[in-house]
Length: 225
Length: 241
Image 1 (cartoon, rainbow over the protein chains, first blue to last red):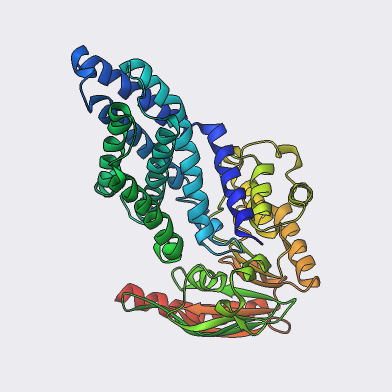
Image 2 (cartoon, rainbow over the protein chains, first blue to last red; image 1 turned 90 degrees about the horizontal axis):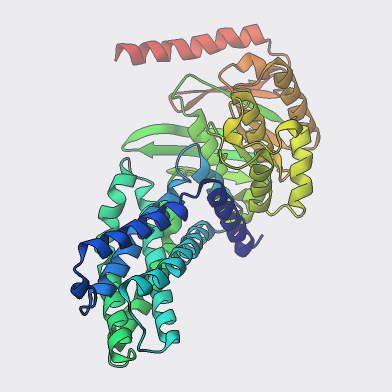
């Protein structure tokens, strides 16, 4: 029995559930849309073009919206023995973490794919740097976010007030990702590329290695039935 | 598959939930596990399923510990816990399909359809699990535990919520499983329901194995007397303390 098969089974199940409930994709998507409108109405028109405002608004919106999606994705496994049901699968239990993190990544990618062009349009921004650099940066940011988010969701699922504590536990860990996302986005919008910002890029890569690798190794000890 | 529970102890915060439990279940035999509330029956089942680690001791399957056998061993174990592990928004078919895929069943669609028939849920196969009655959910949860044709069955209160017809059907199903060589450990509060299906009976009181003997030649009334003698003093002491 391969890990890949078990992971595919869990991801298939998550998408089926999403199709029925819309909890992980539609609700965060709607929240992101509402937050974007709040920024548009709250900011003076001149401020919308000011340096850093667009990227800060966009990434804050995506991260807030993602919090609901990632938390709910793991939260579904809480209760009625569902997490135990997953842990009984005949593969290394890290497969459960990886599957949940990949599910979170896919849902986050879908919300991002819809919201990013809307943000660009609403704020009247154009990309000065190469598109591939923007896509790589976005990919690294949402991948790191999904890894951290899934790990914290797994830990929160063990706690009595886990759903309430989730954002409190998550956001301090997200600070480096937010900083890297905003700095690199500004560089791509204003400077035409990420040259000279290699440190932020390296940090994103390191974050990805850390928050996908460590939970992969330790997931068995993080979860208890 | 032979199950051997070898001196299993589980402690939490200094409290012994299981205390040096020793049990063996031979292939094709059914062990009925009884005991009062909080005795440690469900904890023992979870330790046997590999969901909880023992503080001391081991559970061996065909002479190999769970660590030696690796995670692949779980493909040979079917578990029904007190909770159903079902997804309310998924249909009956989807719940079974997911379980089949999770356990690497080769033709999961055919296996799920066959299991739907076996647990009598054909008419509601496309209904979400959340809309079903307690008894139907229990049958679906049983199907989930059986879909990968396990050699070991660990069942926590499988008769809960079943009507008279399906209580009989479950007893027949357990007989089929035993005939196929499956070892079964069954926790039942209403032990009389499962008495006819059992080969052995064990009683756990306060985490300790208080009784373990064969069922043939052991009258249910005699067991009831023994059970009361073992259980009631323990409960009385708890009340006093």
